[in-house]
Image (tube, rainbow, N blue to C red; front, side):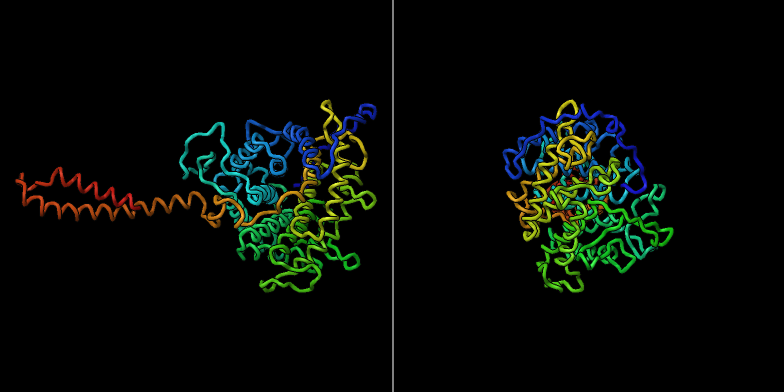
Length: 515
């Protein structure tokens, strides 16, 4: 959420005298060496968790917004995937479960004041990371208590959950907000009318939906998700009105930040940010991988009709990399942060998601592996050199080209360094898994209805079976009376007053067991 909020820059960073900036004690890494990377990242994880609110799992302390909490949990999940650590795994699990919201769609009521489509989208990306990495569903929860699975907010390990269910619900609720009343479609930045940005349609909200739909399509093979991805793409990339514009001279795309609905989306903010490009590029890579489209072809080879050429789309986004990678040293930079020497808390975290999506793209489209590996390799070395700040000597800075700490610090700087360093290991691990490759817990829960709906159905069928069981019980009582009274003495015509009542209840109980 960057467009409307102007957050105070880290003033302290402007006051740090140069002689206080340490020039030694940098984190030493050998990119792509698992032992070296896994030995180096614990201080970076510790630095990231310095901003964590352990009393409210999933939340990072102000001034960091909820979307960045989701992004940070995704970074930690990557650390768990690459290097392990059950304590970290439990932190991640608790965070996800605690933030799922009352309906498991990651719209918790306590975030209504600030939650936008991009916030929900970034939690969806973290959920998909958990799904595709087969993150376990069985971490023990220290404060776990017994609850009813039909409670409106089932927030503990006893509740049967599924990463796929969560991701599907996020997709569905975001798609439900697709707005055709202005600008021919698109998602607004904000969800709730009272929030600043409700009249702004931006690239990141729509990129999140595109990215989520692409991943769900590759994971499940369900064409519904491909339809969503195509819908979003067709809206983003539409003649001169789209937020994605093609440049024939460089065979690349530019992604503009957004436009206001008051002008019917004719007044465009041309700011470009790395995380927009990362999500769109990797989303195209998922679709390219899933549809087996050749990059060099001009038409798709998939069986899906009226679908864009995802290989060509991926190639054009890939050709936009020089916007955020210095061609002289292959180090990632956030262009506007470097140009202006001023970025807010959101913008200083964008290299985190960009580094992660570069690694994803390389796994899904191996023809880009060598170039992407070199970018991550050089950027990781630069990031490690920036992590020499603070009293702990491993506080990370914003500028990875400087060769030392630049005086900036925060959650964004910390997790950006963490992401780029750990993702140098991407070649040593399997790529994103699909439905046939993950554990059974995530195979059978796609398109479940939400908890309240499922429980309503259970109650309905319970009452139906109870009714028929009760009727059958009276029929059984009549038969029991007919034969029982042939052998026993009637007492005022009520020989079945006790025994047959018990037998009738037993029959009803058997019927309920069958239910």
